[in-house]
Image (cartoon, rainbow, N blue to C red; front, top):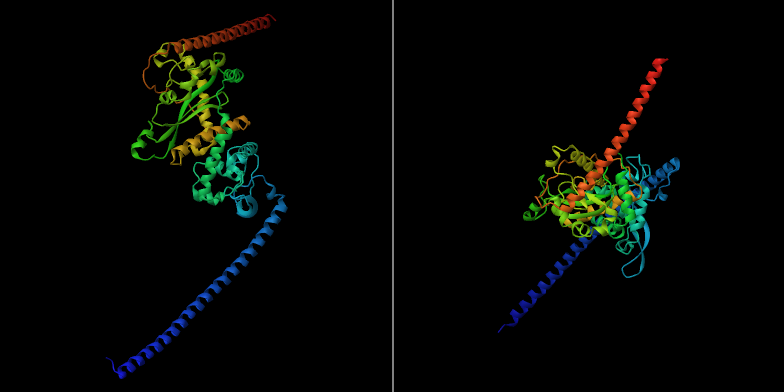
Length: 482
């Protein structure tokens, strides 16, 4: 049991401990207040610096606006009234949109503003024209914007509040160049990487939904006959009754993954590619396309899996009015409505068959020129397609073909950047097949008709030449007698 002296000693020690704790607490409180005061002082200094920077920015902005206003007044340029703006400075403007819950609210968005030079409709201008930047004229661009504006993707409901012409311009600018990366897109167009991809996806989907009807087969007799007349009215010998030329083209892509799959896309030129099988008419307008086959697939194999082989050729009365037909190179199977050239073995000793093959190749060059115009207009597809998603690659090629047809329908032709396409020579046949009796008979009929036309034309020319020669002889004799 503790004595009173021991208890008193413990109490005194506890009192001393309490005093020390109070002193240390006061010291800690003072240190904490010092830290808080120093932090507040630093924050105030930073705020002062920010205010100074903002005032400096506002002063520079006022000076810039004053200089820009004088420049516009001097040269008579009204930038605010331009229908489309491409590259330049970000300007924040207020736009009223509808939020997801139905409330009207005001948000700020980046508006493209072109400082100098602004876009024009002069096709000769290779820098600041619509054709130079979007590979189409102003009329075609405005038509595309109007056609896509009714699509549900562009209802300006949050978060999709960017005007449609900015999204169309971004997507077309991407397709018009070989490759514009995310950083270049941000610097040139002022859009983030997410918006860059979203704009392209929306535009391609809207193009397929709103303008997909531009890819239609000429089943109507009036349209088919008009195409056949244009095929036969070109200069030189042509085959009568042709309503389309078929061929395939490989578009080079990155190596797909995994490696077991990528081997299927390696073509005979050792590139990874996807195949486009297409048919075009006499004005280079596509009437049928099929995208998605690997570059390793032979043209004949891709053709057999297409709707042409499964539907169109099996029902010729519904798709080839007035005994018309289409043509293809020797890689495709001969049929009553698909005429291919004579084999080389039959042309060695027969000059007339060589003439038929030459005329056939000259007529078939329409599809080669169509591919040339396609990749020259949309340079994104001319070299490597910088995408990894196979479905998106197919959507890009399909969208480019539809836009190609739209430009032709609007008269946006005479593309100055059309590449020179040469015949690739004899195509490589896939396998020896049993000859199609109907196709052989139809080819012989077309061959004989061509030879008869050439014979009549040669006789007429010979008669005219003989008459001219006799007249010259009589004139010379008359002059001698004088």
